[in-house]
Image 1 (cartoon, rainbow, N blue to C red):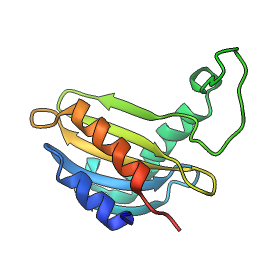
Image 2: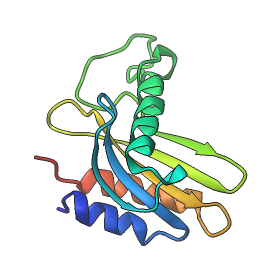
Image 3: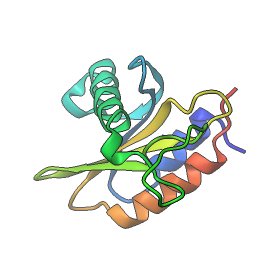
Image 4: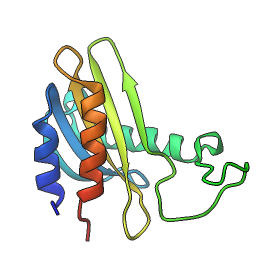
Amino acid sequence: MPGIDECLLEAMRLPGARGAALVDWTSGLALGIVGESPGGDRETAAVEAAELARLAAEQHAFAPDPDGDGTEEDGADPPVEDLIISNRNSYHVLRFVRTSFDSSVCLHLWLARAEGNLALARIRLGEMAGRLVLE
């Protein structure tokens, strides 16, 4: 089971990967960063990724409905599976990570659009998030 550094290095092996981070989306704190950061400032990129994650996570319209009956259930699972943002030349994938404490972290992968494979990145980030060990 990989730790933060191993997980981020694995993310950087994905085609088109420019940078990856593990971010606490409640505080904006980067728990680990590798590669480049959008805009060149790692701390700012982590805070901005956290803001996007928090916005998505706090919206009831995006909350899971496991029973299909229109009601929500509380649990340790992240409120959103992943968030994908694209622009003219890149993709940003934020994968929410289930943890034993409060599931308030996400993996942020920045991909060059020309070389990246969004479907592959999403699948691999899901696998990495499932194996990630946070203590």
